[in-house]
Image 1: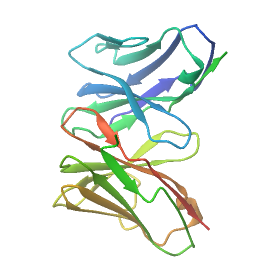
Image 2: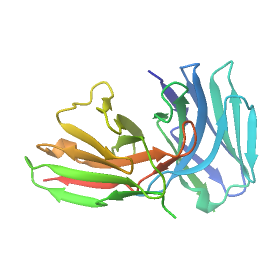
Image 3: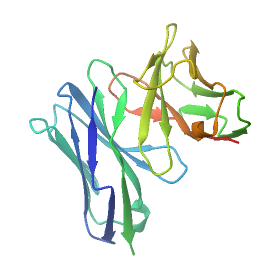
Image 4: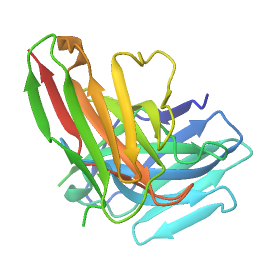
Length: 113
Length: 115
């Protein structure tokens, strides 16, 4: 099955700096890559997603890049704010099995005011 | 608002008893739903795929007799943790997509504590 690796596991940045989280996946058939933000004890919330036919997508301070050849994708958060502090998960979805998401191990982001 | 509702939000049960968790899609029909398990400070681990009208598909290492899944209608899937033990204590969360390969909406999760 799909194996998604995520780095780093923890990340601390100063407010206003950028944060980058990287993921790799193993199954070349995966074609949908969402990023979720999860606050303690709450459900994951989608923050951005990208499909395999696109190399980059941006939504205000958040961007995701995808390199299909290398099978890795990254989340970029610019001008970080304290409310960005949370755990972020990447995921990969397999073309044939639809929305079974295989999640990365998570990154705990702390934005220091 | 939430499009996937999960109930209960938390439950405490005695060892050896069974617990049922419900996952409902509120404004769309979901032929497929997914059940995940999350240990503290860890990632979401896919347990099984719930298929309306057919048997669930379990991930490797997940005991199907332990975690019974029933997808009785297009808006409801249930996960029953049978003969629960303390090691089953975890955060269980379901998800359902509106369409294939689109955003998956998550339920609010169920915190299960087995004492």
